[in-house]
Image 1: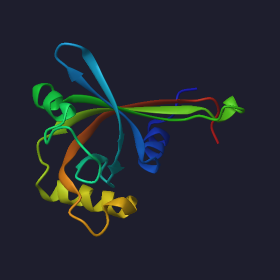
Image 2: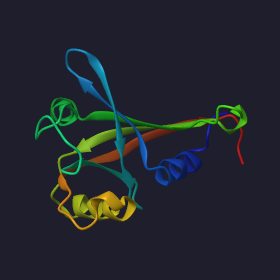
Image 3: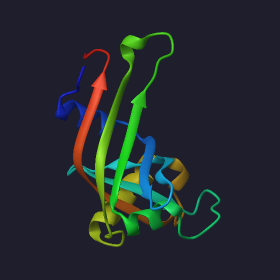
Image 4: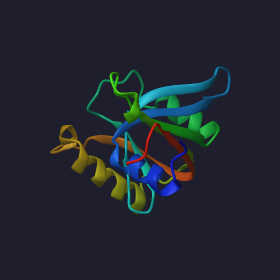
Length: 143
């Protein structure tokens, strides 16, 4: 059944990882697993960190967003033996080139609080700041 918007937003905020989909101009949807945080105003922060190895200092998702600011974040819950617990939420996002502003700093602080791997370092090259412009979700059952 379709999740009410408030419930979809709550599940997005309570989760911490999902699949970020951006638009590659040649191959279309470019999906990559990410960690993220959502602040109280509903902004999403996706880190570009220094903690995990990278092949480039500018990731493909960043190049995609610079060319087309649309993105989606898909989060889901799966229980193999009990499909009554299945649910998913898809947030429609728009990238905001504000990674160095107070908003980006707020989201970076949220990421450091959420993930111990980021503590005690200068963990981020950037934090991608994305505005939720739409949200939808589905659940096999509601609590």
